[in-house]
Image (cartoon, rainbow, N blue to C red; front, top):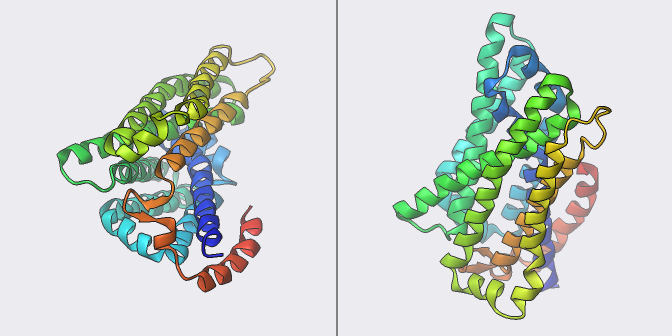
Length: 310
């Protein structure tokens, strides 16, 4: 049990974060894309995420909660190192939550203000998450180089969210707005791809252990399908987007499915790179785990709660 319980909780925490990135990613992306639209288009974009956006953030709460209760030592180290971007993330999520509710009640001459607030909150939350990812990848290294890389990943992750958000709009909209979403998806896919390449290059370069895991034989041959499949999905999504929109809207779900696949493969690559460390190259999941008795008690609650959240 001392071996398996931390492993189970690491898997649950990773799953929660992945689901959050996909689900809240598309509605954060839609908030980012609202910057250059008119009021009618903004109303349609908001309506496309109305039933989902609040529930999507539940996965972030679950992921951070599992980090706190299952890996308390790592929780202190990670959030301590990322205190400022975490505060900015929370500020962005609060701002967009307030704006989402108030724009529905505001007078017409005030709705534009709340639309801008929703955009600002979405962009701030996305940039903060990307900045946190960049610092985590570099093992919380200091110096200007580390912060510049974190700023780069912040921009790239915001682009990735815009990409999956545009793909969601392709499913949920039609006519002129759908055509604009197709164009947005095409542009954002390049930014997303550049971000994945940057992270893929930086991760093995900052850690000899990660470099060996990816490039030593036979690992190189066994793991080659991951980047190959990711590149193939980018090409497939680009081909699908160029053939859209179809007359009967057939296949509008395909870009979103491709975007989800790209996110899943990218997350799998990162998870493989950092396993078994929860704090890069310093603290393993077993070293950071709570007592087995505590983990077993918490697991009972997770088994009950997780299906309800799903």
